[in-house]
Length: 254
Ligand code: 13P
Image 1 (tube, protein in one colour):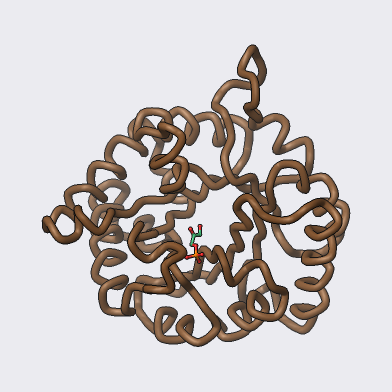
Image 2: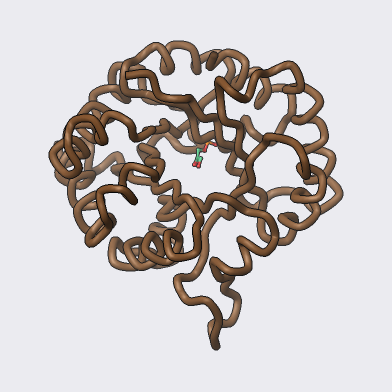
């Protein structure tokens, strides 16, 4: 089954608005020869730069995502951003359950689940992250952790919703460490996720879901990762902060 690859840049807590605009312009320029019928390109700037970057991307095929969101539409939730606000500023996607949210900001499988339901009610496509820590990997808990994240995170979603979302496997030990998972290590978990999806929503639908890999993706390791059957793209942190390296990753994914 041929799935359309996606390369997504997660800019995390980096860049002022003018820097963000310049990076978005650089990415547009350097990927102008890429056929976006063959690959999806997405960027997730910090909230403060979403409006500026949205303007830069207008009428381009590059997609825009929030890095997180609250599950309510509005209310007394100081410091939070709602799905309505992401839509309003031009986002089509939202990253949900990133390990940094889980590690540092109390994100749980239950809040991830609420956010996934909210994303779908507002027409945002979620990119849901799962992944194990080094300790969990060494304790041979990788599959049970991922399974729990999937079961609790996706609880109550319809098959259609699950089929339309994007998953990202991001082993915590590979994030920002320069220590990427080998294509074989990543594929082993992607295959496990694929199997889980197939048992949840059936063979054909389960095979249609895109599963991205994230964790120290760079221009020189993306090809090996993309060669694996169940790796459908990358969720890129550090290397997405330079137009050059991000665009190289996009081009080498084709
Ligand atoms: P790095 O590419 O910097 O390892 O970050 C990965 C990541 O967390 C993307 O969401």
